[in-house]
Amino acid sequence: DKLRLDPPEFTVKNYACQRRTPLKHNNTHLTHALELLAESAAFGENEGRSVAFTRAASVLKTLPRSVQRIEELRGLPCLGEHSLRVIKEILEYGASQEVESTRQSEQYQAMKALTGIFGVGVKTADRWYREGVRRPSDLMDSEQKLNQAQQAGLQHYKDLNTCVSKAEADAIGVIVDQAVQAVLPGAQITLTGGFRRGKESGHDVDFLITHPEEGKEEGLMPKVVNWLDTQVGQKGQNSYLESKDGPARPPSNMDRFERCFSIFKLESQSCSPPEREKSHQWKAVRVDLVVSPFSQFAFAVLGWTGSKLFERDLRRYAGQVKNMSLNSHSLFDSHQRCFLRATSEEEIFSLLGLEYIPACDRNA
Ligand code: DCP
Ligand code: MG
Image (cartoon, rainbow, N blue to C red):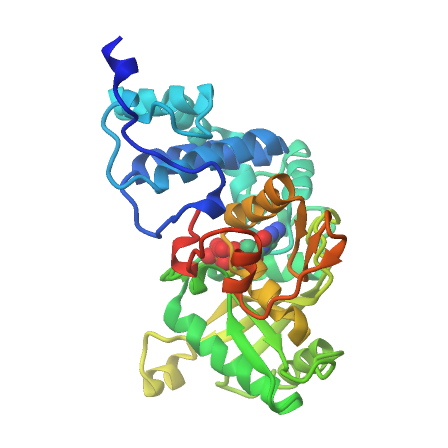
């Protein structure tokens, strides 16, 4: 009874876009476990379950200190019965049986390895799994048909599953800027994705390209890709290896920008130029390029900065709370039946009636 009368330990808002989620937090032992279950549910194409675990983990990321007892979580949003059970077990015994057996399971490990191939999604990985494929190496001498992106993904498997550092991201930025300036002087590139949120490493490097003169950006992507392409073969230089054009995102996603998933060949950042010359050390790096018209740029930056859960909740909040529809192009007010213009992220938050959350606090 005393417990019930005590005020809650923490207060957390319902939507991820209403709260600050820094990169470093105090409950990684719990969030890693919940995120593994989220990943496993996604492998089983159970999106609802996957999002539920992701939301639970995200709530724990906003807490100002590490959770010691399950009672402290009373009154918090997004913590379902299943997530609470897992958290309780970890707090009491140091680990969760379900999490550990999932981690060890053949299916989880195979799906993790196979979806780790550039160009391979859950559906393909699952089909291969049911046909007996367990590891990327199983694909080398099998009958399975691989498209061009997947072949590149297999070829550079190790590199592409090694984290990209901020230094490498910056080096890629220099190359992309060179290419963009060569084909459209005055164009601007912006680093988005995890690196814009302050991450020190990521699985790829995301860039948004625009030009202050509306319309100049039209047809830019093929020119940039072509410029990068012609750099291949220049010995010892950074170059462009592979591209995979969109749309690779689910059709439900309303993104209609010119987009290109690429693989760059980047000279090793860790050794000095003379050493590099001798050893020809380089690394394959995934790069995601998106072109946006200037008038949509604020929406595009907001939409491509993430995190994925932050984006999901921004859109959900817009729809459920404000009767508006938000995507990476625009904000539509369904009540007034008109599009609301904005030239900065701050303005978009304000139109949504939200307190501004800087990119470094969008690590939901
Ligand atoms: N994005 C999204 N929905 C998708 C794909 C992307 O909202 N289906 C947005 C949010 C992401 C951003 O684009 O943060 C970049 O996508 P990434 O997959 O590169 O994600 P991150 O950059 O956040 O993480 P990582 O460090 O793993 O690259
Ligand atoms: Mg990224």
